[in-house]
Length: 479
Image (cartoon, rainbow, N blue to C red; front, side, top):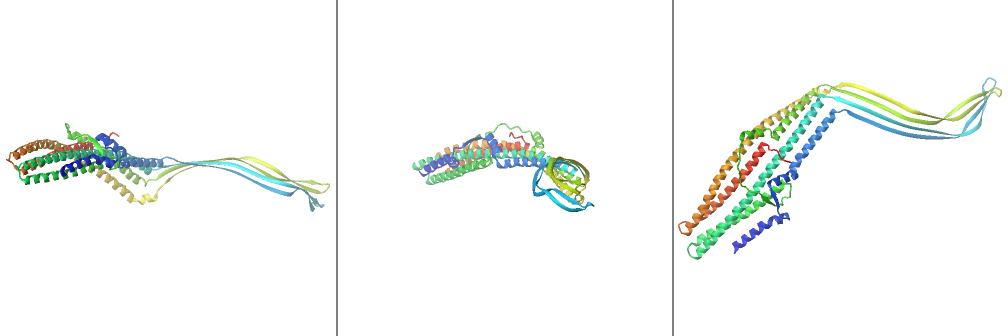
């Protein structure tokens, strides 16, 4: 009764655990759908995409340094003022003696004057400056190559992500296949326990055989529980790669069945040498080379030319005081008359200037460490490419060897399963006839489970090796 209860409980847990953890039904998913979801949601891949955007922004900044600098300004002023002069003399009579010397001065009339002024003036300035520097030009080329390298880096990140997702997907299928193997093993152990118990009840086998059968069932139950947990762990890791919550569970659509595998090692290596990370390494070399040239070119004089122009337009108006004098010879007096007068006029002005010259950066003449750093970066980029080339060839060779070994292993594993199944059948017959021991039967059953697990591992290894070969070859990713 206890064994049956445990099996029922375990089956219920396996059926309900994904829904309990994910709060919904498992998501149906095949390997291609998993790849598409990962390319859409994986945070690591999104970082690579952000790196491309940053590199192109830096390239645009380097291009801006090459373009003429245009600056301009415009201002407008509108100013008014008003002054009131109250009780001011508007006519003054000066009495003279015979020698035109003043005897006295009298104010004959007082008037209120209001002096107003207003000005409306607009001013516009425009200047264009262009610096011609070899260093800036090669800095732009370096930034352009760096942006190209980041673009290839995005392809590299996509290929790695595709491989990782496919590998984890196949590991999930492996975990589920091994769960089936363990389920069959538990069924086999329970059936054997029932037969042994029946034979013991009939007095044909010893009590020790029943105890051994119970131990065998307990071990199979523990293995099944552990394998069920392995399935959940595999689904959790796959969910993380898809950019999803790790509590998600999946209904994985697919199997580990193999198809005909065609290998062309020479062609695979030729394709691998032009895969995105190799192109990225070449772009890194171009960027480092341009940076080194920029460091050397900073010692050369840079030319500059600038043109500026200004324009002023507006008008002014004001009220001013004006005075006039008249001499009366009869009365021998000078009459001074003060009056207000309105004035207005336009304000116009134009100016321009041109400057040309050359500048030399004294610091650049003395800054030899900058050259050494740039030269070292170039050498590092070249050595990285050389090391990457060897790594690429090794990855193709390893994947090819893994595929060949997996194909051979699958053939051997299939033969092993067939032999193990026959061994279990014969061991059961021998044990029932009293010609074999119960221990021989248990060992045959364990060997069958191990052979089935070995076959699952071999098929999984082949699927992963095929995905690894595609990554090593640099097969383009369909975004």
